Length: 269
Image (cartoon, rainbow, N blue to C red):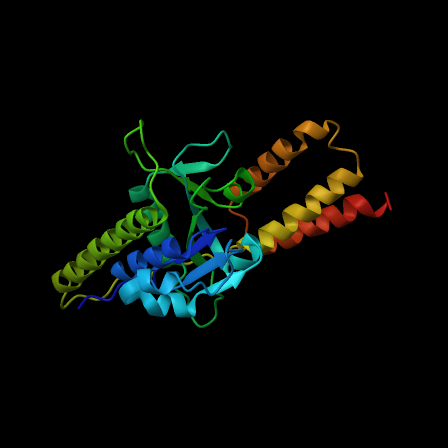
């Protein structure tokens, strides 16, 4: 049996019905996913309605972790993809599920570490509540917005369908990559293996680290009178968050930016 990489984390933001959480866990189990994180589930947790719907994925439900905020749920995540039925008017990278799967696998390859290197962080798939989907403040915390090219007259999927679609694309991409790797190994028998690709030294900032920086930046800008139009402040804040997210900041770069804020605000105090 081929060994696939560690599957991404599935994060459900503000899920509503226990039955849908259970069905999502079943879809995860179908595709070899195991780690489920819930952000502020509407009906609390544990939810007795989830377990019967999970079927063979009951262990995923039993091991699910609950968080109060998205940033806390993604504390060890450095690549997060947000699934949505609609494209947003936000300056954020976008992809379809197949391209998103390739992005996640590339990130996971780079996440393989040597003894003298630090992990670069996990990957995660983010899904919103059943009735409304993710809000813009949640989407802008993600690195990529993923929309599927479904029927434009009815592109909406239920929660479990959306999880299955994303998880299936990742599993197929990982399966094909593993097959190609096995064929290359057979074809190169008797030859010296190629050296491993050089990995970047810098650890990518996690979603939690980025969110903490965003909040500090916004507070400093607010204190300095930057947000002169209150009705537009939320839009400007989301655009600033998207700008820094697109840059793919490392943890060291985030630390440097904290120093920049400290220097710029010191005299003002």
